Image (cartoon, rainbow, N blue to C red):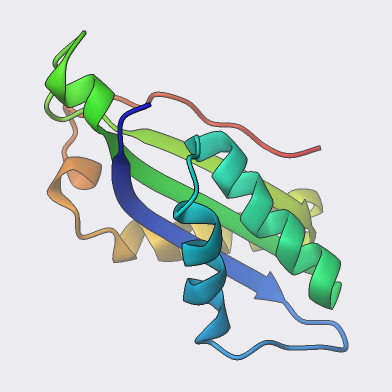
Length: 127
């Protein structure tokens, strides 16, 4: 496995419990520091939030550049992968999901993620 780097977008709709904003990046770091694949990382973040605070909905979208793609093999410099895990309101309500996806589209400042020539490697959703 070679490293990958990018952005992780996390949203949740609280039910009875909320978590501090500083806890979300900490949670991402806990799982990202492990020998990891992007798909599992995305699901672990969503699962943990769902298990710990039982929100009405949770959404995690990761955009990452993988060194295995840019350094060797296909050698595509602008390639990236996008993975997602949606649960609750984000999975069941298209309007809620689209609002989140529109917000993160506006926030993506990494050139490779806004470059129209970049390829979308995979999209997955949790059941």
